[in-house]
Length: 443
Image (spheres, rainbow, N blue to C red):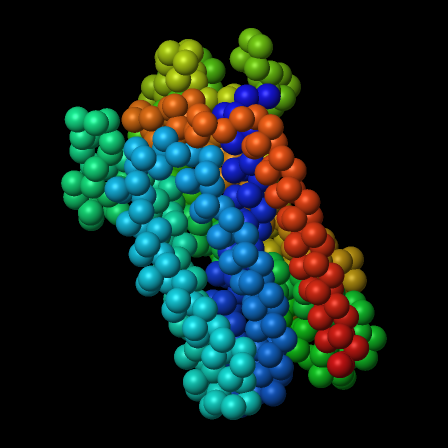
């Protein structure tokens, strides 16, 4: 295997594992802001208990995200040196802003939120978790800025030495895809936090046989908040945020759009593929289920609009077709499942019927990984769909990796990362389940 391929796999592993945690942290922090507000304004023991319990899970998830995120950023220098030289003047600014304006804010107030409970007023507890949520959101914004610049670069100039240099800070920050991608990611994070809260609450209810126990009352409130917030967030991910983001991709990254939608031939009245089995050689879809004209309407607002297909682009600029198509459609499938689950669970909340439907509570427990998996599939579709460019139309991935590394060095570090992440992931879930069992038992 080549250094380029191994470096790509290593970065995918490290980013993919890291990306398990920030969406949950962001969404959970905002939901805890609601919980602590109600604990403060209503002087509610149930919401204070919920804040105490889910605050511990937020701290655990935040810690796992920090540890894995640090490793991720070091790879820009170790495995992607030529890329770092090319974009360092631009890429460094949002990463520095993320550390200065977001990470320190988030970590400082998280310490106050977790360690100050019982030592500070409930109002201060509420303010501290709001600051945690704001810090996490700002952090996500700057990371999205950096990644969006790679998708739709703006506000730069090329130096005679062939480096990208920052020419307009605000144009680079608010490049054409930043705000749409930020809104889409933020709504997806809220869905992750909401279904996490609902699933954990459902698990505690299923483990706790006493309906009058304090843990049961807290868990029922967690399920109520989680399923309603999860439904609202999942709908927002689909429309308007997901819809308008897809239209932006259709205009600015047509190769990616054709790949994710499985449009291999340019055509008017392009169909939206609902289901298909993709094959790469030659590019074709089998067992297709499609709606004629719907893709043209969704992309350009006209059912008769012409949509460029894969056949319109040079072969060297076409992204990997199978992985891009499958990851995007799996993201959509999981999103539709979450909308349906959230709608059913919300309806069943009336009269407390949800809490008597053990099968539905177990479904909420099983659905906890679903929004996180949807985020992972969305990230794969976005990043693989940009290939072969690491910076769209400016730098190819084949020209970006560190050429002074040997395949053996990269393979060794890849295996080491996999082992470490396996240990970290195991510890995270063991601690998570231990805290859930303790809460269900009333300890």
